[in-house]
Length: 86
Image (tube, rainbow, N blue to C red; front, side, top):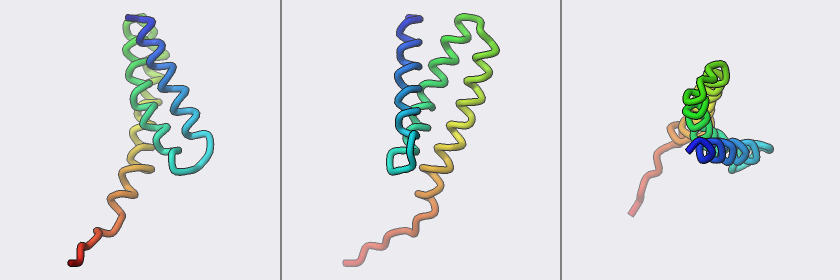
């Protein structure tokens, strides 16, 4: 189980890093990948009793939430409603 946690956290962290490497359509989805990797890493750290790194990933998780809000949610909320004309 511990190896699976490490591999999952690592895979999603690397995916997130790869996606945000340059601005573009897919860049914000790197933060979504981090929404997966950080909690998985936090579970691993908690099970290991590694609290400094747990809290580090907790901060990373909070920053990923803020970034998803900024890059993915807010632009959708600010879009004018499309009207359907028949």
